[in-house]
Length: 392
Length: 146
Image 1 (cartoon, each protein chain N blue to C red):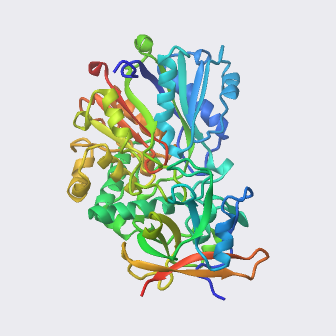
Image 2: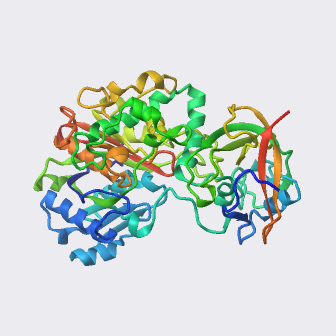
């Protein structure tokens, strides 16, 4: 394939703020974002003034022109917002940054996401208007209004079609909590979860228990991305982008739950493109971060990326397989959105980079290929694969 | 008149551009009207400005027999809206209409909220009229078929 991002760019710096429970950040959202960017630049060893592009997703409120002014960037050459899809845009924003760098549109792009839910209101709440029109008028009056409620309907159907049982979902939650116990940055560090506690936890909406649902947090995260030719000029081992794509299947956006292929994480058409660009398959992936809005979405994502047959989920999704250091497919090794922090998934991309560098708190030995699946069940979704220099 | 869900949720209204107005008026008249392409005669839902199959812009709202099968469902326990704080569990169903190119509609399944629900079960529509508000409206609910 002549048109490819494979090996063209690399992440050379990552930065995060402290992570807080929702509404508990002492700092404003824009300040959090600046702090994460400054941290990412320090990690890379690059002057913030040399950033000339910004890419984000999910209607992040930090405007690139404002960021460039606040940071004193010498010039702004690229400003990109990935449409729609909530956390489904995380790896898509990276793909947009990578495309701009590969095409010579910019030299140093920061991918970022900041959230202060105390300042701007929480996700996951129903609308507070008296009257509602449009797509939501066909769901909200029936009490279907939160992300958990939108996605439980898909997961229920998938579990029905393929005989998936609750312990498969539980294994995904336990993997995140297991990894968070080694990660001092994790909001759930020091708060382990076991099978009994999961089973006894209340239902949010069947088939999701409390522990199947992501956290809500305040914080910010950023990654510094440069062209591969420059990647070795910085402080860290580069995490080369082997593939980074977004998309969705036929009429995924059909309104009022009318997408023809309904019980899906939305990755069936994207995954083959992802692997083709990376020139890899699921068997080559050493460690996986898969966005947990809800565990059921992770399960379908892993199936649709070819790690497991849909009818084999009960055998595949077992605790031992998903937990570092010994599992065959270590999953969400920072604690992810369930137990590290819900930074709208960008924390997963940062953890994937850490695995390539050998710096994870749940390090997988010889991690050369590190994959991220962003935001299942929305549209568009996205995914990316990082590789060490040896994979080029 | 008692309703399936406690009062206080946002009430539905037609979009200002009128795209789905015939649907909401149909429910008030106890008719299920959905969009059908004048050219290729296929049904589609939710409402759109053109037919996604043949790209014809002329679409009509036509009556569909108000019955279907449960395509998926969920039992909600955690309230995310103040109006539902005292509600307890409730059932939301996604109903597929094989007689209308398998379009799907969202509603509640009437009856015991803790009943076991079967995907594939036959259901029939119940028009739930809300007439005690300034702008009356009707919700399309479902009960198990006979």
